[in-house]
Length: 428
Image 1 (tube, rainbow, N blue to C red):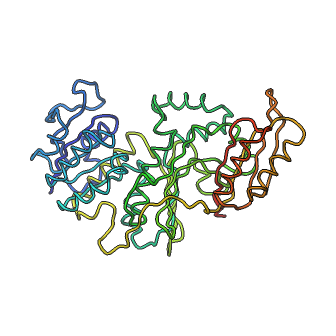
Image 2: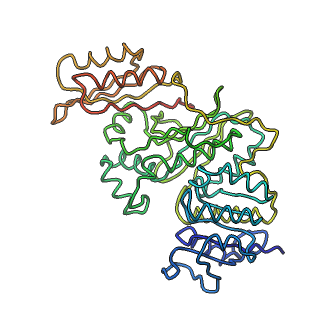
Image 3: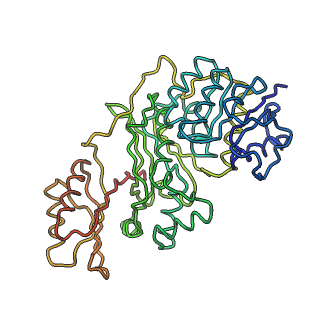
């Protein structure tokens, strides 16, 4: 029976969760035995929920990665550069398979690391880097290899999905719900990486590179978060039959691969609109499949550690397949910026001064930009004399709605910043 000897770098929640699985592996369905042959972390004396007694300790992750006593290096340090990158490069050059949950590392350097793995004939596996316990990387790379994928969309940040869900459900503002998410452990003490959309963008870029055999170029990914989404936006969208979610999208165009993360408004019947709380979900569309949706817990030590262990199980029968599933004969695509003539319907929210003619000024500004109104909802003015207006537009180009935004900002009757979100087409 083959034995895999792991070197684990990083003993936070996920690292300890992995050690717990190793220590009770007799209850799992692994094809062979797993041993922890070495560990490393920033703080050796820190209290941890699992015992690391008996495991050889390394003060340097790169030394662990190069050690002859391990044959699999598991990187759970985090960060796109620094010790994590050096250690992974060291392991690959030493002919060791690498498993990582580090989405930033793969998004920023995945292309070069994949080439390094190929040169040394070893696996680079990162199922845990995207959507935690949802096995979307393996499904997209392996199970759906016979599908001509045209689009991959999803909800890939549980923190943001919790925020938009709770704000709408409880009618509490962003700051209050964010504090609640931090108390519950759904958000970090510094939530910037999540709420800015950057965490989801790392994951979206990885999936797009796999789905479209593309050269991963994170600089071309468009990113907006939920930190500017207000309860007012969620409420008005809801009354118009829409749900606002932070949506990741990768799609193939004539010019290349467009990848973005931004708040979008979805019809209430859309599959992604029904995913609430901290769940993650990914929807893959292509031929001859049609569409398939995978949903499950996307964060936390349990789901992520289980994804890491799933990659460990694969190494009992290693193939050393290209990390992103791309073979030499595949058509290689490039990441590109979205074209300004890309079309969609849009959700628009403005605040107007409560005076005669304000609404006429708004519709005139829209008409001058080539944007027509499908639905309009106006609320009474608040205590500051600002009357919220929500509009669903007919399909128009992004350049036209952006031009309309600039015209609206310049109106004397406009108060604050207009909010614009693309509306995802219904799948009903």
